[in-house]
Image (cartoon, rainbow, N blue to C red; front, side):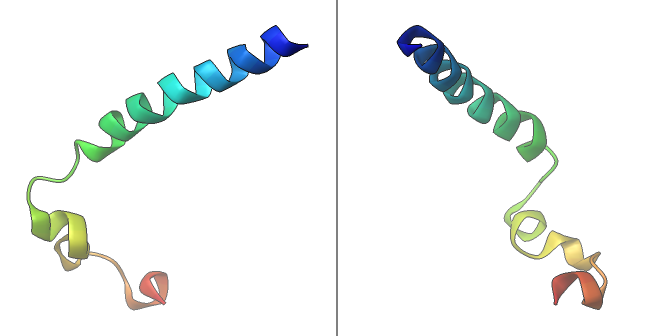
Length: 46
């Protein structure tokens, strides 16, 4: 069971940065990152 645990942890440690790079590429500026270019509706922010 120990090798399975290590494989799951290793997969997680590789998958999270890859997912972050794929999803994080959408922002073009710091304004996009912090305020989403003010495109979110008020109810989603609340």
